Amino acid sequence: MAETHPYARELGGFLRARRSRLRPQDVGLEPGGRRRVTGLRREELAMLAGLSTDYYQRMEQGREVRPSDDVLDAIAGALGLDAEERRHLFTLARAARRPAPVREQSGEPEQVPERTRRLLQVIAAPALVLGRHLDVLAWNDLAEALFGDAGAYPPGRRNMLLLIFDDARDRASRCEQWKQQALAYIAMMRAAVATDPTHPRATAVVGELSIRSSEFRRLWARHDVRESVSGTKTFRTPEVGDIVLDWDTYPLPANPGPVLLVFTAQPGSADAERLHLLASLHATRATEGSPRYHRW
Image 1 (tube, one colour):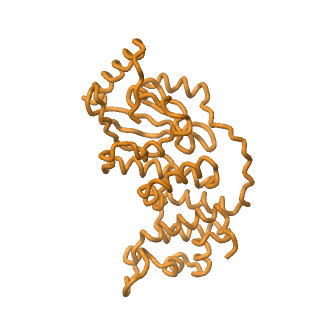
Image 2 (tube, rainbow, N blue to C red; image 1 turned 45 degrees about the horizontal axis):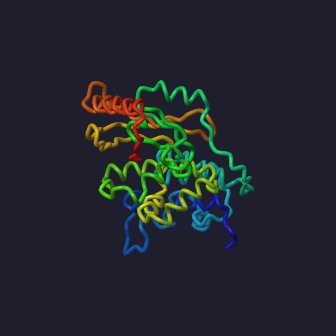
Image 3 (cartoon, rainbow, N blue to C red; image 1 turned 90 degrees about the vertical axis):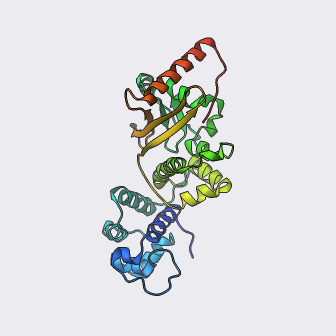
């Protein structure tokens, strides 16, 4: 088999992951006898999309194919993709149509515009700026009160995926809430990888986690994708106790752009009061020059 296009491999992986989730009865087919594969067979998916099995197989194998938009529409319909997954499919396919890029080793780090830094400081909630590959680029004082000092980590380690899968963290945190947040970050990374799967930062983060975490490998293989995500997180702080906050991501201008990650509590709630108290304690420590801490 000829060497595959790196973007086409990403497309093939997404198709395989989505096909494996469908059962024959989900699409009106008889399950039949004993099946050797999880989900639909390739020939079943190809039939539903009106394609030849050989052509569809070439797509899943990441070989040089350039599907038309009509073909992509047919596959999206056969797989039952939602609107965001459909956009992801088109992004992957259009990338696969282009020649593999020649990477320029510029090494330029992502920059946070001054106006974005000003925005961080006027937001009355813990907020972070995440780069396209989930690197923590900037944060406000309330975020430092909640998470601790991000500056305690080398710049290359300030990454939400690396931090959440850090083996040094308490294993008791591997609860359902932790899993949902990990899935959300992975889905955001998948969206970033779709536009440039060979980016050095993406390959470094995904490569490291794939080596040291079987849990990451399993979740990464799901090929979930989300452009922006939200959830709920419980912060266990020794100063004021547990604080339950909602978190949301908001795209910032750029292409591909960073996102603003903001944590909020219901106004007037006990969680809002605890967050306010934590912020006051943090401000007092900063004024007194007390040692900074971290609980990322």
